[in-house]
Length: 293
Length: 346
Image (cartoon, rainbow over all chains, first blue to last red; front, side):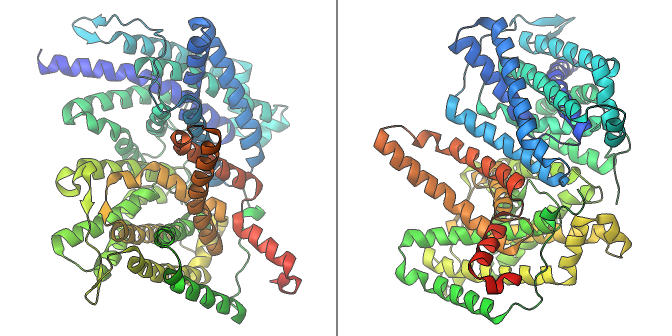
């Protein structure tokens, strides 16, 4: 196989894994839009959902469908609890205090998961077929390709939902100007809670997909720290930007891993994030927001 | 956001009164005499505590006083430790050169990461420091030819006037001296024009700018100071453990320092000390407690100690941020006022 074909193959695999990044990033962006809260616990919420799925589907042998349903319910409940009891009391407090709270929550979830399910890898039931997908002569592992398809479909439908539904419009109104939105009769608290529900859903699905492609460990949540660079690249307040940025980061990770060696994969997103901060802090599709001082 | 009570620092009197000085001198005397009476494990522990106090002071200047959040402080500690190890191995420099050098190198590298985002308000610095955490750790692990990868480097003990600091007790005095120096230095920086500028930047940056405080410059100074402290502490750590490897400087350690600052009380020098002491002692108490309980009931608690620690760090961070944002320092102050109403006005 010549290097062009190899390059195409790595690119395809990379872009395919970028689909899940976009899904996680969407959860972060939605919360950020609604309440200016940057959720560092996103990765842990995602990881926790995958464990919910494991427990429901394997331990209680509820099967895949009810396992997913149970995981969705569980993660929405956890998400609402976090919003209600940790973030709402912090409303109006300095920005860094809120960031630290979400960071602390991430630490709690990681610890609790470690205590309950232990540090070892768990194998969750395969949802996705392993049979590879061939695009012409390009070979994409089956799980990655299918995870990509599911992630992209969900991201696109959520973007459409946020654009056209009443709830989505309320969200954007609250994002544009909280006080005005409030005085126009939008229940901003409900909008924020709603954004946490969306984040729980995207986190849950991405967690299950991610655990399917890789294995399930308490470290799964650290993946979401890479996703921070997706959010930075796409622009923190751009819902549509996550999709493009997710593909770019996924592609870059895969290609640098191929050219420089796999260990470089783990720092590629961070280097890219630093470059974005240097060159274009708004990200590709972000708007204003950036306050230079 | 505005002037929420929580971040406002109670103005420190410019001159501490004599009683406080007396207590401070007494405390230092007790600490200096400690090795004569205390078992070696305690001394080891006190050394560790001292190193943590220095890092927490640095992070407190950044996060507590200036409002710049760093999630990569452990990596800057690592830079200091590697600087000491490399300067000693390749250049044979003595500790009174390597330790300041460690601070300077850490400050320079810190600024290299922080500079692009210090100009922008908000979240960006957090991301940049997080990137620093991962990228630096990557360098520690993978730059084999210099850092010797996961195996790490061995550091020879520091030598003072031909007298090798080759056990805990001797290194303890070096650390104690540094802790005293950095505590006094921090107190003085905060009382100076610079410290007041830090607080002004944190509280209302635009107002500060209008009043002639150059925000970016002071952010830079705060960031440089914070990483300098981390570098020095890292250097001490290298001498203390006589060993440097990448595992010592992971994300968990960054979280640890952050929780020390929060638990102690952001924007309080006393708080930084209290926080570092509390957070260093906690895992030990926890371990002893858990092992005792586990021993009694026959559970295998040892295996869940690491996640248990993570949970408790997180819980403390969240609980203090929500319930007592001024941390242990405030609790201490309140307790003191309760018991000595005469000094209550202070």
